[in-house]
Structures are given as structure tokens and as C-alpha cells.
Image 1 (cartoon, rainbow, N blue to C red):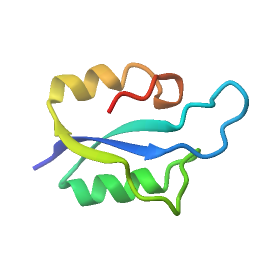
Image 2 (image 1 turned 180 degrees about the horizontal axis):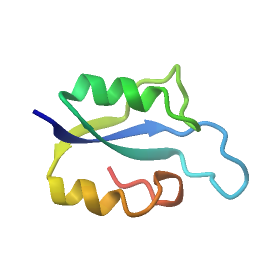
Image 3 (image 1 turned 90 degrees about the horizontal axis):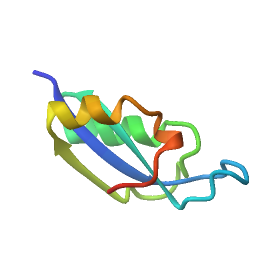
Amino acid sequence: MKRYFKVTCMRGHGGVQHSASEITFVFETENLLKAMEMAKRMPSVKHTRMIVSGKEITKEEYFERRQISAYKQFPIA
């Protein structure tokens, strides 16, 4: 059964316009560990740093957050 997760990571170098220190992604996967592994592999993430936070979210929040790219959103933990 698929579940929905929100994972916040430390942001890597993203250019002048993207100087926020964190970035939040949402994933549809079986468990939080897989979501965290997926987040670590995303572009613009500091791959050697620990995950800031991760938690399960509702299906509605997942689809709401998927409307705008994580790279264009403010970091909301």
C-alpha cells in the first residue's frame, strides 16, 4: 500500500535565486525510509548531510504540494 511522505533536506548549491537553506520534497512510497533515500538522491540536496525532517502526510496534502515544484516552494517543514 502506498503512503505519502514529506521530507526536508539541507539544500545544496542552487544558484543565486535559490539561497534557502532547506528544501522539502513529497513522495508516494511504502515507508519513510524509502522516501528519505529518494530525497537524498534529488538534485540540489546536500547528499552527505542528515535529513532535517520526515513525516507522513495526507493524500490531499501530497497532491496539493505536487502542484508546484519543490525547487520553487519555500521550505515548509
